[in-house]
Length: 285
Image (cartoon, rainbow, N blue to C red; front, side, top):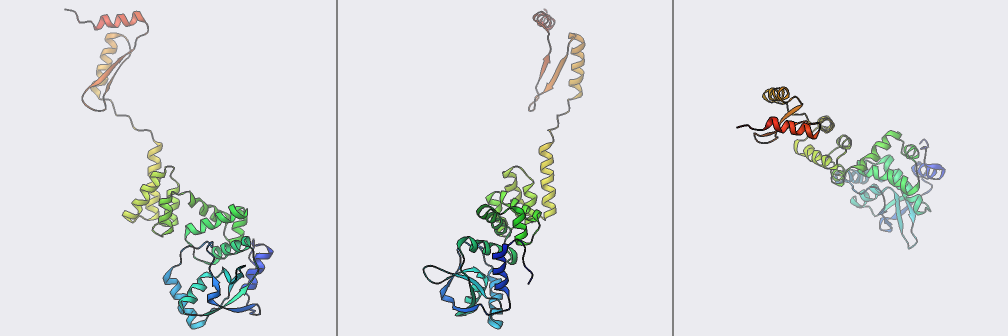
């Protein structure tokens, strides 16, 4: 198998040795001596997929040994291969082939993350959180992450952006109720409330990604466009002209947003000018 770039000499060697057809380093352990790694990135395991793997193991055995490390208090912890471990238990196996390596916590987490990100069908949220852990905990750059998992830098960046979604939407994405395409369309919105509202609309109306993109584009356009001013009735315009000529100054007539009334606005330029307006408007008996 070709060497995976970005893993570093130590990690790459571990992967290659574990995947080698040479079985000299493989030993058999009682399955009761092995325990999963509670900090591994995969949180959910599909029951149907595990059942299929269990059936395959029952017929053909475990084709690739698990990678484990010894624990200080006895027993072994899975570093890579928890799906095989779970499927083996389902298949009723009492022993499994393993490769044992002395690894510290940092190496264990790196290998668990990279193994899952390279080989397993993680949910988009698990994948994004895996990338973030590599960067936040172990100081990886986006470029190093992309090299480690064999994906483009833009793919890694787009995956990390998913974590900017509100928690309500992340849950839908993790559960597979909306897709990564839907999620990316929602990320184009600035308002969290809008993201949540449209995510619910996706579920209610079974919207496609294209339909979701169109809705978000229209919503952004509406928010950018200033509200259209209501066209002033022609009668108001005629009154403005008449008062303009009669009073010799600018007059504005506007209608209230509700009801039948409105306002008249007159300009004046000085106190004397205001007195002149008042005199003109005075009702003479």
